[in-house]
Image 1 (cartoon, helix red, strand yellow):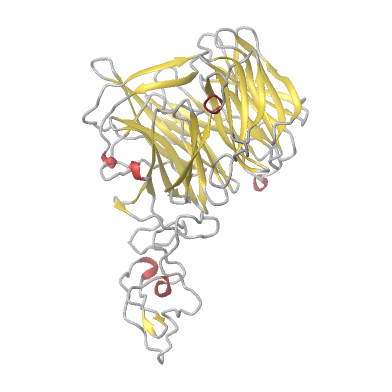
Image 2 (cartoon, rainbow, N blue to C red; image 1 turned 90 degrees about the vertical axis):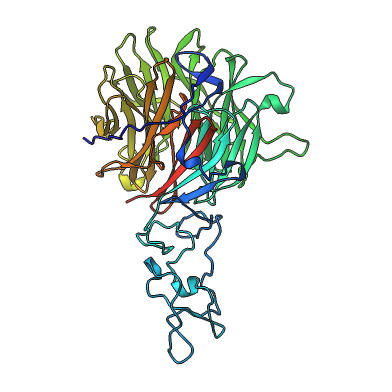
Length: 547
C-alpha cells in the first residue's frame, strides 16, 4: 500500500466562485454556464494562451517547439537544427589530415567533447547535429536516459497551456486520441460545436477544427450534448457524440463523425458534413458509453433506459458498423432491482471478439455501489457468468486492455476503480486482474483524508500506467467553496510521482473531475487536465518520461 501526500499551500487573491448548472438524474450535469474565479496561478506569468501553446521545460525556461521523429515520436513538431545529411562530415572524421575542429558551444550531456564538424571543407560556425552526433536534439523529446539537448537535464518534463476554454467542461465533454502524426483532443465548451485540437509530441497546439452540432447547421430543434468521445475506426479517427432535446429530455440520439488527419469533419459536396446516426431512443436520455472493436469495424453503444425523473432499471446496448449500419438491434444487457439505479461505466471489445461491459449499481441508502461485469458475444448474448462485487460510492470502474503481451484475451484485461471513504478516511485507487477467475481489487495508491482522486489509466506495451488529479474541497469562512488539486502518476511496483508543474496546488473548478492520458512516444506520456482561476478556464498538459 502506498501513501500519497502533498503539502497544503496558501493561495493569495482567492475569488469567490458561483456556479449555475443544470442537472438531470442523480448528479448528472448536462450543460453548465459558469462564472468562476480563483487564485492567481504562478505559471501564468509569461503564458500566452491566445497565441497557441507555451511549452516550458524543467526550471521554467521557455523552449521552442521543435521535435524529432524517433521510434514513434510524433513528427510534426519541427526537426533538429542541423541533422547529419549526405555531403556533411561528422566531427570524428576530419578531412584535413586528422586534425580536429574547435570545440562546440555546448559541452554537457551528449555534447560532451564535441568538436566542430567540417562541412564542405569549412568548420561549422555554430555546432549542429553534424557536430554533436545522432543523439543530439535541439529540443529534447526523447525519453532515452540521455541529456539530448545538452542543458544538464536528462529526460525533462514539460508543461503546456494548450487552449483557453469558453466554459468549464465536465467529464464526458473532453477526450483524447493519438493518431499516426498527432494527438487529437476534443473539447465541448459551447452548445454550438465540438472543437478538435491537434497537438504535436511536445503537446504544442498545431491546429483546431470544428464539428458543428446538428442544430447549428440544420433547421432542427436545439439540443444538449450528453457525452462525447474520440474513437479510432477502420476509416480513421472519428468523434462519437450523443445529444438530447432541450432542456435535457428524450429523445437520445448518437452520432459518429469521421475526421480527417487534421481532426476536421469531411464536408459534403452540397454543404454539411459526413455524419452517421448510430442511435435514436424516443424514451431515453441518459449518458451513453461507446467502444470500437480491435479492427475498427464495429461500435458498441450502451445506455440506461428511462429519464432523470423516471430512471429505468435496464442497461441496453446496440452494435453498428463504422458507417452507422445496425448490426445488432438494441438489447437488454443488465437488469437491476426496482430500488437500484444502474449506470453503464465502461465497454471494451476483447481480442477474441467478445464485448466486456462494466456497470455500477447505485445501492439504496449508504450501502455504496455494486460493480457488475459481464461478457457478451458478437450478437450481444451473454457469455459465461456475471461477476459482481460491492464497493464504495462512485467507483468509476474503467476497463483497460493491456495487449497480447499480458496474456490471453481475458488475462490481459484490467479493471481500475476507486474506493472513496464515507467517514473521513483515505480514498484509494485500485486495480483488479483475473476478472472472471476470482481476482479482487488491489490497492495501488492511497490518498490522505480529504483528497478525492479523479483518475485515468493507460495501457502501454503491456504495462498499466495510472494518472490522477488529487482534488481537495476547501470552504472559506464565508461559506464559499474552493477547489485545489495536484497531479500524480504511478507505474506498477513504483512509488507515485507528483507531476504538478507549479509549486502550489492547481486552482480547480467543481467540474474538474477528469484527467486524460496519452502515449506520445517511447517511454513518453502526456497528462491532460483543466484549471480554473480568475484568468479563465484552461486546458493544460504535462508530458513526462516513464521508467
